[in-house]
Image 1 (cartoon, one colour):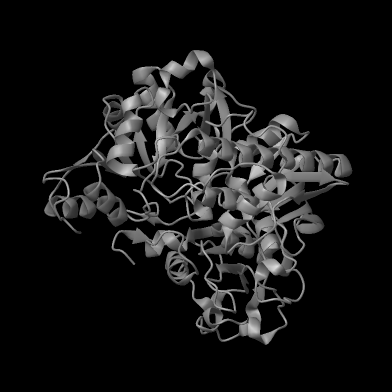
Image 2 (image 1 turned 45 degrees about the horizontal axis):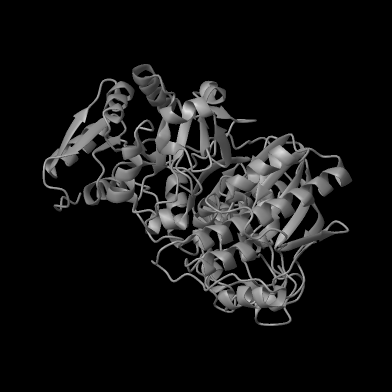
Length: 582
């Protein structure tokens, strides 16, 4: 444990459940986005992604995350009433001895009967519904693929029946499957279709799907008029692509040949983006939105339910989430902020507590700050920084001091409290900048983030001022909705307005993050603008920072002007890049 960490306090000695992501299938296929989570008496005590601790982006498994969570709570692996794990791309039978993988064996449990397995999509469903405020809701799980359905008949997972889009009704602590789409061999679902287009556009992994979503805003809606990627008939969705995940470019080439259309050649990595690439991004985004809206309208008619929970990697598509609120009867929407596979650890733990142990619900995920605390001894922290070549000042009013720095155009690394669970920085592990200056975006791109020119930055806005600046139907605390920026306000916050006049919005409440709220409010008092540019505290291909050491390292190596940790303002007293390791 780092000398400035201290554990999460566990009150009482109630029921404890550990959720873990397996890092490999039984056949040895590596899985991404591992993590660990501990639930105690129905409350999430701590949760973290593996990548945050081991510092390797999209890291598999749970080794480092588990140690982190055990240290944070003071638990041992034999202290849990249940340990729930999930996998992907294979069948899951809890009665099979061979399902006890090497990873589970290495836990060195005294009692292996505590270990339980849950299907990939049911885990996602629990992560969303049992974290939501709803007693009854539709649940939609969408991703690139979950577990094989039934016994695995072929070693290639896509040649078996498998989870891609799954639909459930949640009520109390019970989740009931009501249907699936894209579940037959070789079928392509939303996640896989998006992955194929992302590959075709020159980004060689589904983890870059957000780039495709951003680029879609530049596309010409008339370029592929009449072309349908998805069909909806008798309540079921089907895709016109045929699955071949080892050859994603060939999938689209065959589709183009079959339907007599010209998609052009696939873009090579690091080459220029032309209008055709923008149009292809628009095609897959708009077609996915259209099909999803049809399906949810159907589910609403069939069930009469207007509460919706979403999980699975497709749930991170904030444009599609907003379209649901605009074009379906859904009145209340909860999207799991760790919608991708990082959220499996949370879903596993909630499944264990509510289904296996039959315990009632009482926790609602009103914020994503589920990591551990740091800075047990602030005075020692300040002394160590000074001795390692930094200028370090403890502020008497950190909100006012930092607001002035941001208003003056500086890039500020902002490290506070418990880290966020999921891929979004929500005001505890953020880089903040002035949204009034286009130069803020340019500086971030050039000096820190090294992002493509078409990718936007997000605003964090005070909850009570959101309607003044944005056309938004509900609060967006997890940055999983887009909102149209009101035309008369766009010139006030140009650094966070996308080409289509929208912004990926985070609304900030005083109750959920008082320190971040106070900072934005102090900035509002100075400038009249109740919002900041907020992006994740990391550089390209790095996980978001987790510890103070991570924050200092990122600050030292990249072009951030000021680092704020707790009440400390930190600047360099040595040239940028000079070693000053703690």
